[in-house]
Image (cartoon, rainbow, N blue to C red):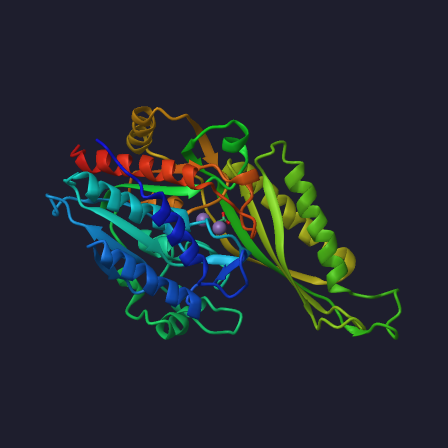
Length: 415
Ligand code: GLV
Ligand code: MN
Ligand code: MN
């Protein structure tokens, strides 16, 4: 089968989508349900309709774009990713999987291919945890990994519930309707930039993802005692930020000391109250991200952190509370989908290797309801979640063709 990827079109679309942002280029900030996110969704919708595809949106804003197969009654094959972007990030994370999915469908249509199973492109809501503190919101709800009560319990930094925020963005309805049963899709495959250095370093075109690391995240609230920075003498101080500093360094030490380079721990947010230079910090809130390819090893580190919390709290006479946001298991890819990706690479005569994803993806949760695997393409220096994130258009194009061929194979597979 001859497949032509329109490189110019996808490059232009990536740039056009990057313009929906709250910051100046090359940085991109597109927080879920912000005005820019809503405008970007509208723009994407128009592109999909122009490609002759049917579209529907669920109560949390997950968007499903369908190319009907000759056997529409069969479970469809799906692909997709996210278009929300963390503050000051780049234009490729997630976007390559959404626009690449659209381009793959357009290229298959142009080639004359007729799908047997329908092919769906999904744009997932809030893969990034920026607004509500938990990543993969749309795919968690879709796969049943998250209770629908989050509609009232999840709040953004302004105190608005998910229910209120999604309604304001134009997405209403009962969250219970978002869930799809196991077997709803016959396969799910996501195209994404690697967000790591292996492919570029080894000059390999395609990473075939065999598993996705186990992510956990939690908030730590430290309550000490505030006071005047001049008048409060050092003996007896209960400085919440000093306690937080010890904990931050302990997290780094435990992650480094796990015995494996696959353990990573990051304190990515730190709110200090009252946040005045001449006031002893009375309260600090930390946001912690802890991951490992091995879920048990991650949990050992989690246990060490909890012990350190108790010790620091006692010694510094501060109270420390931990609120777990998520602690997910690793996700394993399916042989059937891995084989379809490998076969596509073989047909195209391009290099590939099996890799593990250290970042999490909507695929982690799609694996709960469908056989899943991912296609990675190289990104410069392995850099991601930064404005200088970059993927070469030839690499993107190769990834899109691998995706198109994988979708074609999976759509024809009636087993
Ligand atoms: C996804 O953006 C992640 O943090 O892995
Ligand atoms: Mn990301
Ligand atoms: Mn992503």
